[in-house]
Length: 307
Image (cartoon, rainbow, N blue to C red; front, side):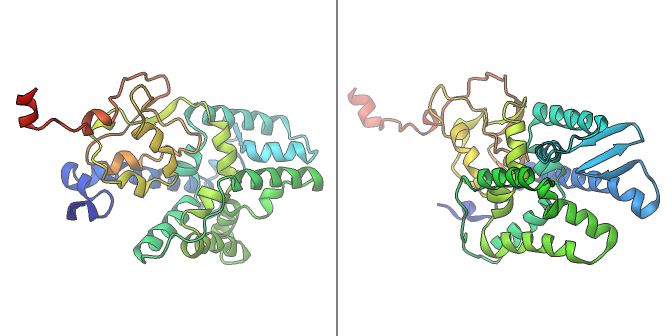
């Protein structure tokens, strides 16, 4: 491996395409997360009540109700039938994320994502080992447990410990117990399990992944034959296992990333100096050459003449 391959992920892309091109989706995600968070803080901080509520449930301009469908499901299991407006809001949100990809919520909306990304960055910067990794089915167990506790206790169980709601409360009411939940998530990802919270524990991500399992918006690797094995995409992907089937598939395998775990964060697009990835839709049937067409050894000149 050459020295160039030991550069930080995205450095080659920045040299080739420029800094903005190598960070555009990261910057746009941060702006998106800040935008959605700001909408909920305008009222408590400045008295501008365009949006009342939080990401669990809100009312925009006094007309549009929006409800987290994960909260709505827990409410129903707990035996509390939501008001009609709340149910309508849950259906609206569910349809949107079913169309664009459920885990878009995780990478483009969730305010905890910058917290876990910061923990991951510091973890790598400090050169710490990967650490303990919960099993691949842990998120399923946490999701089932949350729904079961809601049904058994008659409460919306996840809201008791939801770090997203805790962060929102902390920003409004100041320092307090809420911040300990946010700090716990940061320390868990930094010191115990690299990308452990979003990648292995958070039931919200699993729920939204199910919601958007057949979504239209997808990342694809239509130029996978150009891949030079720099591994930058794997280094930045929060769910790196989703890349392999599309990038390293055999001839005839789709270049689309179809896994429900994909967050559509776009970082693989950002950092790829070979311009392998792009955003597209799940009906894109572009025939991407397999990587074998690029790596197939060529016959020596002597062998060619002998033939």
